[in-house]
Length: 441
Image 1: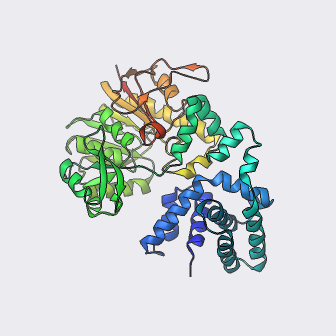
Image 2: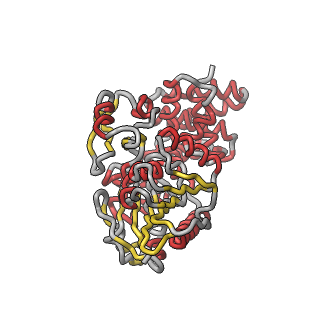
Image 3: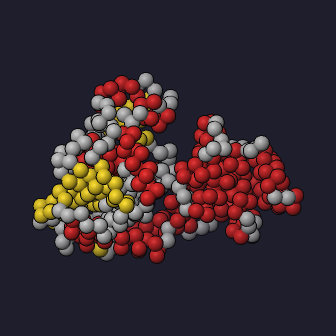
């Protein structure tokens, strides 16, 4: 018999070792092995809640077990599950400890089981709240609101006292938005269908609804499987509106997979014209092609290539939605919080700038590009637009959702702050996005 806690530890181990997302790690561990939807849901909940609190859970364990960081990865993650259950899930400590000890005994040996028992009994008695009171502000906020210290410092510089509101919002349950796929259904029919299972709210975008409550998650319903609607964040949907592709135009999407924005643009273009969808991963492109078929998209041409280098000729519009730090997506992917790497961050910004330059090269004169990220950092957003303003004209993004950009950050002034757009989880109940509009003049 495989316990839920054991499956959770296996998923956490894969996340730790491969840098996969929670969703992909679960597929790798559970597909073809677990068919019970209730078990999948339970594992999903555990994994997300543990990843949210990972620094605090690790602080507790490191305080009571000096070899915690160096022990076997599966063993380490089983201990994390035990601490989560006793300190945050409300499971009686004796039951939480007993479950983990039994799993350790079956997966390792009696000696390891004895160590697990001793560590978890010490963790049960550990008063982390008392320790937090003795820490400096950055350390305390980091552990109290489950964010890395670098992010706490960054958010305080960016938002001041509102940084705490952002961190609280990042820890809330992910908000579900549904975008109607108008290639297969109309807005009103999808609304009536979903209202049988959910409570909906309208948004500023006619084809997008916020799911306030649900009896059945929209992703498990038949119309989702048939492609009549997709699950897509509100801010992500607005990106396509800002680009505003027209029927019969040629659109270049420089980092397209998994293709939600491309499918949205196809719908806006009524399946006319062409969208050249670029990605550097053959695996992602194959999944994207399958998604386009499901959604009835016929005007997307997928090409395996480097979005920083590809030359396709003069196009009417370009979407630049490049790889980013995903600092606006912590609510959806909490594991991303713990992966910050300064070297990788700087390389990512370099890629973003190369894509901006390549967008300019591929655009016809008078053509429009949209640059967007799901990041809140100034360097990836305002500073990159300043870089792009050397060859693009910065156009105004209408504030249908969100707020204006950052005017000044750590001594750097951004002159186009009133033309770009930002969304934040704590203000707009969606992913933290940056959206800018650029014109080749």
